[in-house]
Length: 264
Image (cartoon, rainbow, N blue to C red; front, top):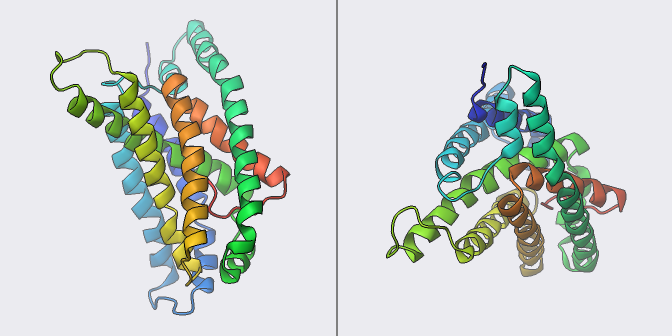
């Protein structure tokens, strides 16, 4: 039977998201008063290479530690095996349990983020709101980078490692290979959600010189809240369920007319 390396599929999907960021490079440069003197092609290349290296590392990290704690990407794993008709049935069977939870999680997360922005907008710096209107991510970048690449980076890579680390620290006295307890997943979800949220702060600082307390709260609370939803779905259903929820959340925010440049 012909097979494809699941890591190759994950990296390829994530890399499509990285490429979707390329058109934004010029916008980001134009928004900064002191633009670097380096040639644009060099800046563009760096903007693609840097996240691609991080993506490669996180795909590897997740492939090592996810299996140690029972986390998985069932659809990717099913797609990786090709060669006969039974494979198509396996893919369908892997997708089916993820659809409803992914949609429900995405609608809930998107509605929360839209409402939270509405509550916080009046407290956010005017420069941040103005920059956000000019640098709103295109829909395809939100779906491809936000929905796919970020989930591979944060849930597949970071969360898988953190769950394993908590498991090894808190269950040190138990025999090797013992079942991972729920608290390891919960702590891993919370920590990875905070890391996910904090990772949006540099982007906020890049377009707004005012990193105020309300702005930090908006970015941390909003993204961390969605991170908990995505982390839970990854734990219970698989990586693709978290990816679907992330995509749906962006669609919901757009449908509600919510401006959330630094949303999940």
